[in-house]
Amino acid sequence: MKPDRGRMLGWTVAAASAIAALFHLYAAGISPFTALIQRPVHLALMATLGFLGVGVQRKIQREKSDRGTEASAPHSEEAEQEQAADGSEMFEEPRVNWLNWMFVSLMVAVCL
Image 1: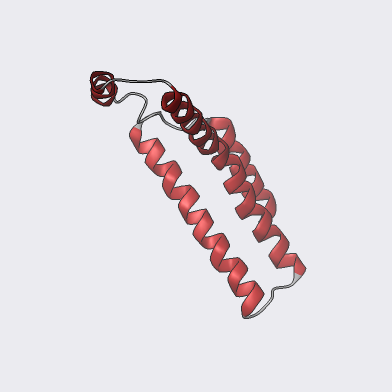
Image 2: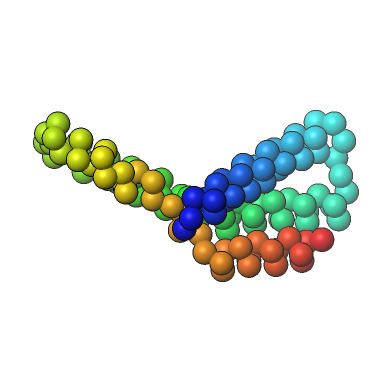
C-alpha cells in the first residue's frame, strides 16, 4: 500500500472516530435523536470503523507479538541497528484492501 493510502486510511478512521464520539456525546447529553436518525448514523459510523479498523488491528497485534518474542530472545546492538536501518518492519501498512472500502461505501449508502 502506498504511503498516501495509509495516510488516507488513518485520517478516515480518525475522522469517523471523532464524529462518532461527538454524535454520541451530543445524543446522550444534550438532545437525543429519534430512533430513525440515531440508529442509521450509529450503524454507518461503526461499520466504517469496523471494516477499516480490522487491518489496523491486525498490524497492532502483530507488532505486540513481535515485541514479545524479541524481549525473550537476547539481541545485540548490531542486530538492532540493522533492523532500524532496514526499517521495513517498522512501516508495514495495514491490510485494508478495496473490499473493505466497498463494504464501507455500501453500509453508508444503505444507512442514508
